[in-house]
Image 1 (cartoon, rainbow, N blue to C red):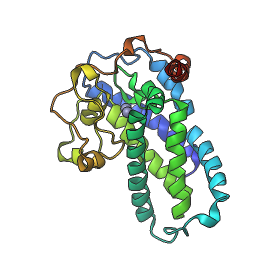
Image 2: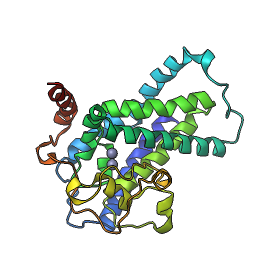
Image 3: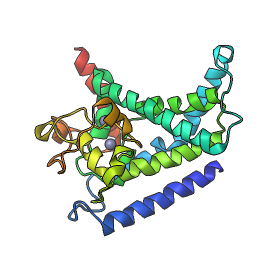
Length: 258
Ligand SMILES: [Zn+2]
Ligand SMILES: [Zn+2]
């Protein structure tokens, strides 16, 4: 798959999830162009694999200098479906661990708060991330690609599946996925990752594409109804547009140091 195809896939997914949200909305009254929609659309430019590919390029160059210390590329000769599965599971577990850190380390939480400033959930909210956070996630994606000898196209295919999983988990969809919730993330679970502390426990459901890690490590929370409110303490005062959201973590760090 060429890189340019990936952008066509992103466009197709945007149309698909917009249509699905119109057909089976969880909250029918939620407007298509809700507050912050255009700002979230602008995030696609910075947070999609546009930036990820650049970050990956520099990460691989950096790793190249450490080449002698790395294991031999273990998976360069196995079938593509094995490479795909190993990479999907490995990257998802790494992201689950990083996501935990983003919530538990105070200065990382300042950056991750940008994503948790979503108060009306839909597929496009999946793109609302501070660029510092994107660097963490994407550079780590490329480390196993390089170390395991997995071709870049397989990495891109995993990126597409992760994008579908992320859009689905954030979508304003009333779908339930029954027993598949023990394997895959879903709106039902991810809403309880974004809930306001007023209406339920926090630091649950860290899964991104797969939910299996939360079930395994005891952080799954699925009470059978949706939270009344999303966000965090003080979300009402948080900036609604991209420039303010990029600045907010830095200002938070400065305030925290005083
Ligand atoms: Zn989070
Ligand atoms: Zn989210």
